[in-house]
Length: 195
Image (cartoon, rainbow, N blue to C red; front, side):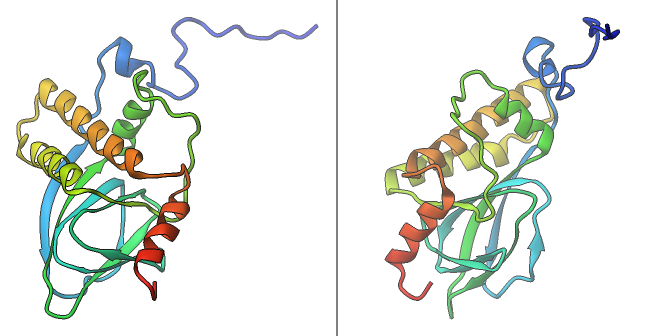
């Protein structure tokens, strides 16, 4: 007969703090946004958190973990902290894009949300990539603007930012025809010979 300690009700859950998000209202302060404009090649950047990138204008190529993807208005990419990337605008082009960053604590909050139904979770090596219709692009731009303009550091700002991030993830997931980002990447490559 073995003596097994029964967990006390005060013991933390297996993934520490996960239940605190909804039961106690503990929210990490972790969603930020920015608009960037580039007209020349960027150095390679190691992404430090979860990021969604939305291309507003211009054309070019992004190299993510040495895979290339064409960029134009309506391109949306989701990268994790294991991705590194560089952007190369086409000759004479200027690329304007928004990026929304979410740290791992906020990402866990999103995953623990009971309203986000995910049948399985994958950690792909390529980024999740899709092209948006103009209607979806306008919605995504409004959502990115909400993240950037929501500058105060209040409890309600955090709640609103999480809703904005869920909206962006929802837009991206609705445009992916398969759960594998590689499938979407292959579809996009067919649209752009030479990738």
